[in-house]
Image (cartoon, rainbow over the protein chains, first blue to last red):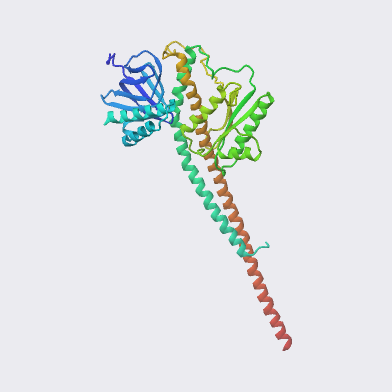
Length: 134
Length: 305
């Protein structure tokens, strides 16, 4: 399936204020509200909401790009994948030390509402992305 | 002509230092405007993809959403007015405010109450001076807005739109935005658009064969996707308005400062002429006094001989 007639995915990872990454890929993995989803070429059209997490992109050159994203959307159609998120960072842009501090702060704030949990999930995702890349 | 040469010199000097300041402001605005345009371009892919997704959902599901529902009997409207934090940008802020006043009049004519929300210190000061109530105002970012600000403004406006009557929040039936659209470096026009309820543009023309929108699967469900999609769409529209306003503000400031510099140039030229005239008049007078004195002496000597 990975080589379905030589089809590749055209991927765009877009944050609200910039285009974070775009290029060709053979596989994209993202975390939706229902669980992780892997997209291969010729995937059926899909529109799904994603939550704070890590997005994996396997490029045609065999490299793996990892990015941390906020809640947003994933849309797949005609081998075009766009991942929309208000904030998105490639793993090499993340400062691991700072991300760890953010997680500490988010955990120790002691609040237990949706916003606090979101902050914790976001911090965890950023750390995971940074660690995977290093 | 009543002033002495020294006083004209002082005026020339102060005009020259003013010119230096306006020239510097012009250059700063010119360099920032490029950055502002780049930011606006960088935000375009997000807006484009979001619009595609919204129209895909709107076309394939007949889900009614609270944000797209037209209230039957709109009684109250909210207006977000986007102005600048600082002045010295020509008529930039005042033309937005004028457009806003026009919209307020129009809505009042339709029998709707108007709640005001402002962005930028100029609008805040304008309404404060006139002692008109502003529900909420945001300041301090007008020349480089971030998405977080837009998200906050969007969340507030959506909350007031969705609020039911009797809630703590003011319940409004429609939301308008007045901002300045950046058409080019030379022309920026104040524009008023209705933000909520959303009008999702569905393709009215029948799509051509092969141009069909893909038949999407929705996860978890069309209505859930729409639920999280629409607020983001609204926020991205507000972000777009803020970015356009920022670029317009800088363009207006550059233009205003350029004409201020030109005016200072003119003024210096004028003062220089008058000062030279005054100097020349002084010299002429001195010469005629000397000549007069010499003549008088000569006459006196001629008389005594």
